[in-house]
Length: 229
Image 1: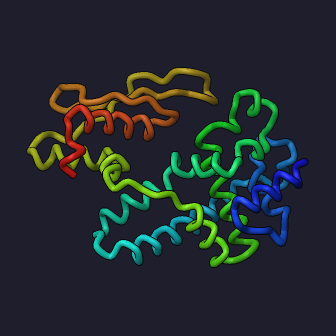
Image 2 (image 1 turned 30 degrees about the horizontal axis):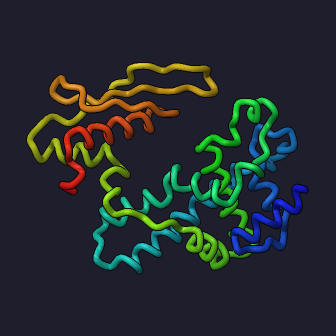
């Protein structure tokens, strides 16, 4: 059954592995009992992230000659972001193939956005090791989603918000951690962004960084700034 599902995944990827064990490793989380001896996907994730960054950077440089460095960087951030990669992973069906430990499975870890993102990067790392740069480049570009330029201010909402406040001669925003709730393995962080004593936005995320970005996005929406960028 597993082999058949791996073959289906390869068809969706448009790439057939010469060394199937690399694909198996890419889909094995460190919590899995069979991931001893370094056979989990963390090293492949590290490699895949680097290859992804390079391929997307080159693609944007060649296909968007009118974009400056700042816009290129924000577009790349959108295309390699956790939500984007997790959605690609769902489209490929990785949530049904990712091997996790029993406890992680019961907690729904195989459906978690962060783990799906990591698995997607690991699969790309596996393709790179198995077939080289050109094979990985083809898989990445074939699965690259369309992007909406209007979303770019939200990619790094913290920077966008800070730029606006500085241009308006207002103090830079301050991000306050208001609450950390839930068990240690699955915490939610609540962050508020404040400027001149006023709460501009509030965000909830699985990390302080993610919560702060969401707070900044809410602030941009409340201040009706998105059309200005």
